[in-house]
Amino acid sequence: MREKKLASKSSGQKADFVVVANRLPVDRVINSDGSVDWRTSPGGLVTALEPVMRAQNGAWVGWHGAPDEKLEPFNNNGLELVPVELSTHEIAEYYEGFSNATLWPLYHDVVAHPKFHREWWVEYKKVNQRFAERTAEVADTNAVVWVQDYQLSLVPQMLRDLRPDLRIGFFLHIPFPPPELYRQLPWRNSILRGMLGADIVGFQLPGGANNFCELVRRQLKLPVQRHEVTMPDDRRVLARAYPISIDAQGFAELAASAPVQERAAQIRRDLGNPSTLVLGIDRLDYTKGLRQRLRAFGELVSEGALSPSDSVFLQVANPSRERVEEYRRLRDDIDMLVGRLNGNVGTIGHPPITYLHTSYPREEMAAMYVAADVMMVTPLRDGMNLVAKEFVASRTDNTGALVLSEFAGAARELKQAYLVNPYDIDGMKEGLMTAIQDSPAAKTKRMKAMRKHVFEHDINHWADEVLRDLGADL
Ligand code: F6P
Image (tube, rainbow, N blue to C red; front, top):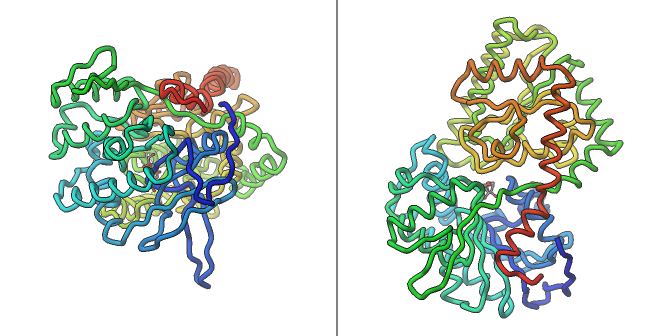
């Protein structure tokens, strides 16, 4: 990734590279004593984009995570941040409603029922317009603007209407569904047109790009050739896959550092030095397959394949979208399931599942990756899943095993993982046991191959490919 230094823009100076995402990379948190803290925002989008932004030195437009507060642009830890305000009502209807109770389940194979409410659509349009306007204010003439994810699908066209001089990219971090599912959406054509406002539309996998092209052909009757859509005014839009990645080198260095190695050893001691430590780290989301994974582990312990006094499952679930009904229900289900499994198969001082409903900084996550014997990443559907790549990057000594769902985008690249179908509990049990029992040499061979791939296809590779296609001279 090429580096470019610009003067600070908090002064009101315009930016020639702008990222637009629903969230800023930091959330504003108000403590009980009234003081304000900034905390890293949840999710893979921020993990991936933060290093790109640091290298490009542009501006980041996004919501700061708190309701009903209008903030001025500011510099946080070297990043130029441009906050977009959302009211309590808009958070409920644009973010929790249309984004996360309509589009999110629809795009993830309808593993939960998408809800279609016309009022939510009204708020979604209104908020997308605000993001477009704020971006139009901060982008310099001919700037490159990179719009992120499903919450902002209408922004590319809205922004083009306001600022035809800009080069606009759009990247979808989650899956893009097959036409049969997508066509349920009452506002299907408007969303397609919104995305087509970009010069390039990026997806995690070729399948998502194909679904999009097929829909553009069928729904909008636009010609598409070799992933290039020709718009009525002859403008060309490129729709293709750019699989996202991580700062592999940065993660490996962090994982190899003395404090992280010491912390990893401490985690194992705190868990009773088990012979098998299985790890899961996810946002608490119904797409992540937590129920299925816990059931598979619980059955292995109750059947005696794994010893309850010598095997630990450490599951970290980062709090997420807690006011959305499906997420509340999921939390209750997982609380109950963990309680039941520990109650059924635990022994004194040895509850086999350690469940932590909280978020941790990068250093602590790296220590957990280093401490684990097996990492389980078993979503029912996932755009990519960067936790899988972080685990691989952290295993600097080529040990450890990754059990990975076939339905995670990462499975297309990490082919040497122990691949499982999360809907098949017996298959998952088998996959986990193989990952535990395989010889160290077999595990090392797999890990080496995965590490090679992740280091060759890291976040710089991803950003360079997108920015090259965007014609960004940064
Ligand atoms: O990766 C998908 C995504 O929805 C991102 O757009 C988002 O930043 C992340 O997950 C976390 O979700 P949320 O912002 O709703 O907490």
